[in-house]
Length: 146
Image (cartoon, rainbow, N blue to C red; front, side, top):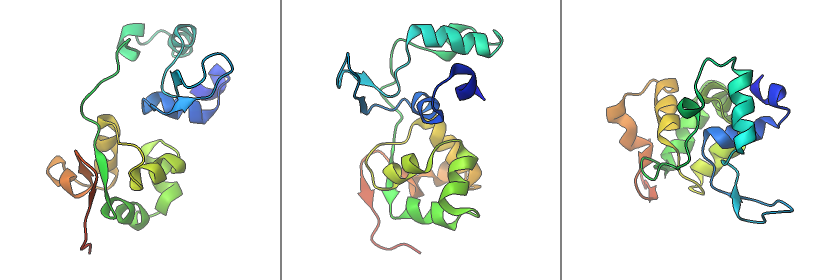
């Protein structure tokens, strides 16, 4: 609904939510803009669409967090997603992201932000003390799974 109200692709909203740091190819700023960046005018539009329930400073920041993102543990993370009732697409819908992003996490192409880690644990019925099974500070592959 937010994407429709702002007249943007749903994928763009996901990019904002995940602070996606992959470059966006634009005519004006080739490789200098990241997918997770949001223009100040769009920030104002989001506040308006949400009916002013949140102040702009509650939703947006001029700085990007530098800590907290973790890598998915291979292949444990992928196995957990496939074991979810609804598999990849159902899991993506449940944690409010797109399936391509989950595949990038599973292949250790990009890290998972802290707020998404918490959603993943909740959806899988795991506690914070279980996070080491799925997330690591550095790329890691488990040899024995199951």
